[in-house]
Amino acid sequence: MSKHVSEIIVDALIEAGAQRCYGVVGDTINHFTDAIRRSDLRWVHVRHEEAGALAAGGEAYMTGRLAVCAGTCGPGSLHFVNGIFESHRNGAPVLLIASDVASTEAGLDFPQEVDQRRIYEQASVFCEYMSHPSQARRLTALAAQTALSLRGVAVLIVRGDMFSQTDEDTLLWAAHPRIVRALPAPEELQQLADTLNTASSITLYAGYGARNARQQVLKLAQQLNAPVVHTSRAKEFIEPDNPYGVGMTGILGNQAGLEAIDRADLTLCLGTDFAWTQFYPQQPHVIQIDSDPAHLGRRAPIQMGLVGDIGLTVEALLPLLQPGKQNDHLEAARQQWLEDQSAYQKSGEEKDPSLLHPQFVTQTLDRLASEDAVFTADGGSPMVWLLRHLVARGKRRFLTSLLHGTMANAYPQAMGIAAAYPHRQVVALCGDGGLTMLMGDLLTLRQENLSVKLLVYNNASLGFVEMEQRVEGLLDSYTHLLNPDFVKLAEACGFPAWQVTRKEQLEPAMQQWLDTDGPALLDVHVSRMELVMPPKVQASQIASTALFGLKAVFSGRATEVVSLLRDNFLR
Image (tube, rainbow, N blue to C red):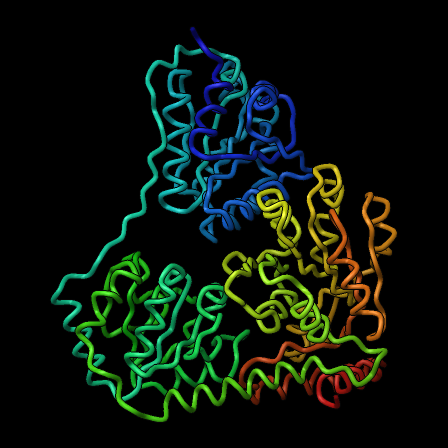
């Protein structure tokens, strides 16, 4: 008995493990969504496709399972672009069903016709047109298999009229995802061991590629007597209960992490692809192990590169190593890490009850949130507060836009996570600029009953951009935001909200907000003049900020200079 292509695709998606599809219904996918209606696949009706792609990516990133989104021809499928780029770059296995005009109109410049392949092949591991109904199950399974195996986005392009066509569907094509785990050659491991055995001081630099090798990394640190620095993406995996951990490096990092790499005789990178070369040693005192050979030596000069799974490679390496030399490298790094943590804690102290610093708000959230909460954060300042002031405790999960750097990602990604984990606490740290950029999908939270807790850092500005401009010695321009009343906005969308403007209001309001069933919003008015301080402040940054102060005074904005000093240096 023949089946419609739409039914075959939906069945293949379910067999590949998909549970939800995000999108906006219409024209070229109506037969596809009707097939979903009659299946166990859940349709999540978003208001904007970009939010749908981010939600699918959030679900796929956290669960490791395939998540799906689908769009109509032309604008519908194009609206997914930014969310697809975000999902592809962070390694989320997402499958996009992108539709196009009917086959009879292809190549005739028909309204809404778009060559989806040219758009999406740069942000996918698989991107193909379906050319015949007999390919429905085969291509869908292959797309799912590729997304799951290579950890990225797969795009299947289907012309609108093909969904209603039929096929006998006799061949049982299915997805068979596999992850390849390589191991370096024995002679390479011995060469690495010989180098490590003769190094006077070693720092381990663990990245996202070491996410499944936490125990092996700790064993290696113990064997080498080495501090462990982690990238921002590896925070949740490497930070918890780590007696060798010294935090992060980079502009969002801390002094201990920066100095542990700078002062080491040798830095061993474990699954690390941190992009900023200036935060690596300037001389080639770097050895890199990565599962992807294309990553070797692309961020910093290296003296040795090995291809291998981090866990397997470290396990094979450990028997070849001598006990680490006793030196003060680890002790000095750990002592500086304690000082860094103390400084973070002090940055959240509120002496003026009328002045709410975002650090204090985030530290309060860290204390009140559940031990297995999932946190997302918008690109910009909220991302910094998450990385610095929320403690990874082993069961907590974190997702920020660290590779694509988009705004407006936090609560859409949280939507997908809440759909996948309806009984877990899911908290989105939102900038006021990010939240208002995709404000329409606040309605999705209520319509789909997604229990996302929205924390709005309301400083009436694009705060991170404002800081960038000031650090460059510029007068900040075009960053002011005329915000709505977020409490009234949330209530109009059908869920409760609280507003906080003073210190004593924060904890009781936050506790009520976290305890609420369903979606809820907490609008916290935070200091606009907050600076994100790097691990070490350069003289050029001080000079540029001083130049901003001088320009502000001469432009009649002296009160802002006073606020900048009060909020950051006179506390």
